Image (cartoon, rainbow, N blue to C red; front, side):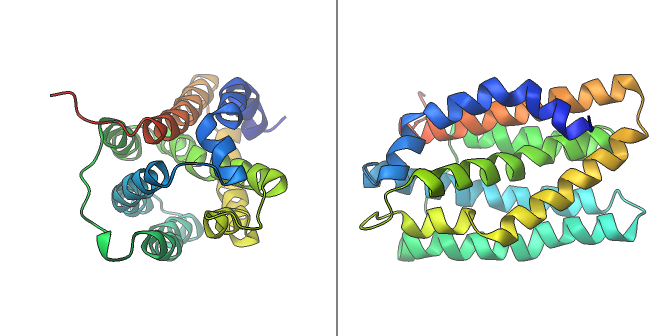
Length: 215
């Protein structure tokens, strides 16, 4: 089994918890309160700014032109598409929110991994952003009530084939690096991946509760 398969098996229980989360279920049937969705979009927009910086930093670590090009693509084209999606929901209110504790945790964790860990572990830490959204997006699309759903634009964006294509490219790159890694590094990769999946759950949970700073 390739590393990505082993890593997904380790993260499967967390993924199941994500599918069961009320944010995901209510987004799917359109009953999610508007304020909770806007909070999520605002925090996601803030996170993606830091995500772009992390992808650019990761690109600089590769000597392989194809890997470097892939991460620069993540830092530009992918972010531009998601930025457009955010603006379609936020309008004139875009860019006025402050980062929540969980948003900052997710951003700082990713930055630490892509700048301080081995390249293999950095790749594994980035993968949840793609694989979880790809799987959750397709799950929501298949189970969603689309007619009259105020979140249809979001649902259809993450069910798009272009997004799954990027996920596949990154997964293949992770597997290629894992094939040449020591058992210890592969374990670190899996740990980083599972941590990233847990943070995805925390991000949606934070949005559902509209998390605020307690002090």
